[in-house]
Length: 292
Length: 140
Image (cartoon, rainbow over all chains, first blue to last red; front, side):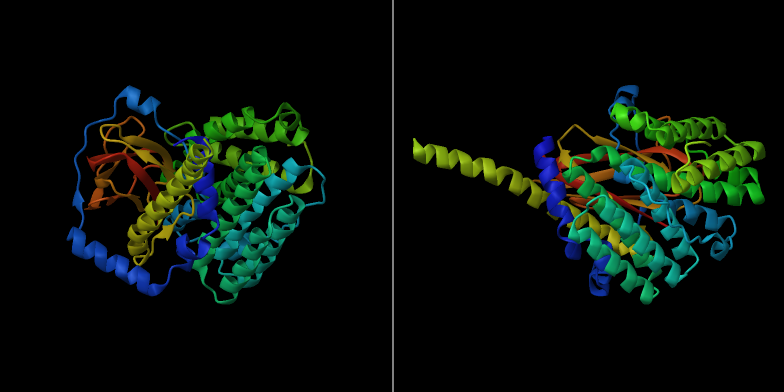
């Protein structure tokens, strides 16, 4: 498919949320799907496949909205190690005013991760507050009315304590903001939202793992391929954005993070270093400091 | 001449629209498959991978997964695709142990990684002709 038709397809998909987004799927449809699976498959079976060739691996594609996991996945894995006290981790993060669009995009990403923390804590008021902050930041980036409507959905789901729908709605909001950025030829900001969410998610998870380190928990953080991808994306940004002090600082933080998680089993010291680096990076984003 | 120009322009306008429609159809079918797993507590990612699938040319996607989480990769293609398959491989390209579901042009692979890291998802058109596909995943 050529890029123009793919863009059109993507755009068309984004405008029919009521139909395609799982958060809005009704119970009957889910039950129908379940019945369909059981009838058609008669239960799952193990599969056998030949190994991929080096040429095949070279042709692997990366699609940011699928290849890069959301903080919710990270937190689901952490929960399996022993459910943390998420309530203590909820923060009322109001980023400092800035005119830098790059900083706003990064801060927006950190807020999406905060939204997931509030969902894990099942704190509906915090979710509403964070949703409001996300929309406020999105407005500064001149996003469309459809994104603003997402704020209402977040409020509604939070009022109904529908935590599962909220997880999906937070990601859908982030994706809609990114789509708007692309439509406004602001695609360089898209990656920054992803980076912001990843930095904040890793700050939280590395802090939790560092407190009660086990090798198994340390291995959860071994995701060097994600950092490689994010660094590659930074390298494609316009030079003007790349040279912003905050971006220089974020890039340096990512390089340090990559060194910390490259071992098969990151050590306790690796995880502590990672946490310190991520904490400094997130503080720089929300406080506007370029020093970390 | 004018008639030919109109004919040409109508095709230029219709082709991308049809592809978009096919993508929507493939995505709604993929969501149908994933929707079944959500009954079992799986959360569906909003992001998706869409494109064109051809016979003898499998498509490969990189994903980054967390050890201990459970994943289902659900895919669908529109006719003329008749049968597709989803498979999962580790970072070295070796197949991992995964469960399968297949129902003609809808298929899924279920996988629980032991370690966090990079994995590859392969989508293959087993029967039928070139068609639009959509793949998405859910986790718990």
